[in-house]
Image (cartoon, rainbow over all chains, first blue to last red):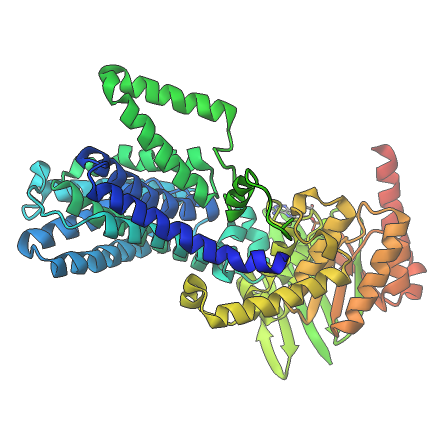
Length: 323
Length: 263
Ligand SMILES: Nc1ncnc2c1ncn2[C@@H]1O[C@H](COP(=O)(O)OP(=O)(O)O)[C@@H](O)[C@H]1O
Ligand SMILES: [Mg+2]
């Protein structure tokens, strides 16, 4: 019987994924989820992609990056510039590919020299890089400087958001269960022991960093084609910190923690909308309180598995043969 | 035939010469001891052999499968790939990972699927992961850790952590195994078990073993040849019998006993 439940597990996962999709799609169509809620959902999805990919770099591989917003801005500007000239679905699809690849290439170029060194050089390099990118966008004519780009047509919808969010989470979770992902985790645990066991630490640090940058690029594309408007200052240092907060709050080394924290923080922000000036103070206070009671983050380094749903199922009488 | 030849190996840290002009040889299938008082430079030799330190001068040559490789100046992961794996004196397990994952990680060089297959869990991923899971469980059975496969490494008692270090090193499929004080901190019963384990894996995996150990009864019992270091210098080399009666060795160890008594 145990075998059967194990076989069911992946099947349940896909069922859960499909039901969530259909449910939200229906609620949007009948108008229960209004425009405002839709924007919140878009923010949640984009933040999940950002947090999960930063978690791969920082939580799982142990490399501090402070420039995630910089990679996001690359994707966002690629998308904005493309869609303003080519406002078609093909332009959108092309900008997803180009935004992701360009962010990955920049990630690789920044990562390779800095990740060869032991220590937190990456944090400094990424911090500098994201500032440089921001200043380039402010000074270039084509990006319309500090005024930013506006009137970007909206192509990002629930379908795209959901596919890319679920896709990112699933692929990174798969990666972490592969020998390449385990290599990354071993570097976080003990780089010297990892190298002595045959792991080329530079290679896997760069791999994790490049995958993470690629995902941030995709998040940027989704953002640009949803919110109409881009401004270089949207992607400043504070945005990188926002993402880091989600990762730390959810738990370094927990993908489900990142997902949970992204949703939770969006809900808190939404509720706090009504408090205007006090908003940021309450938000910060809440973070401090959560970190006092859960210093390891909501999930620590654990994952929510389908067992949770099975345990919820325990509210109903257990089926014959199970347990 | 020498499988490993160490020639005039020297390592200085600033003014301190931790290893001076060391010549050593391991023949295929040998179990060789490396002993000496604390601070003699034994662990430094291991760190040089595994590429964690770069030698100040000298050469390390591995001759296996009809191929000669110079190991000095190589990266640790390439040396591991060439066939040298080790354990650490001050246990360096992946603490927050499971016992199984500790071993699985060291299989890295022996796994045949690419990044894409790993990202999408393609058939080659599933086939290889199944194979290495079986191989890892076999190594855990050998080291008597199979019932603890899902426990975190840091929660194992000390003796079992030392066993896990050995299982992890074996997962890298070495031809030469370097053991750095594997019996440190073990009680006599555990040391006996460890002795049997070392002799057993040596046969089973056709290993050449270099062993650093303070427990003289263990060293004298299982080593065929012994090298003795003192202040970075090789002061003696020979069979256990020869070493036991060597004046310089006795003096070096007496010196240690005296200084220990003063602690
Ligand atoms: N990284 C290092 N930097 C400076 N000195 C070191 C370093 N590693 C070892 N040493 C010194 O080299 C000498 C030999 O150390 P070690 O090889 O650990 O001795 P053993 O393993 O024989 O007890 C000691 O004096 C130690 O302090
Ligand atoms: Mg030592």
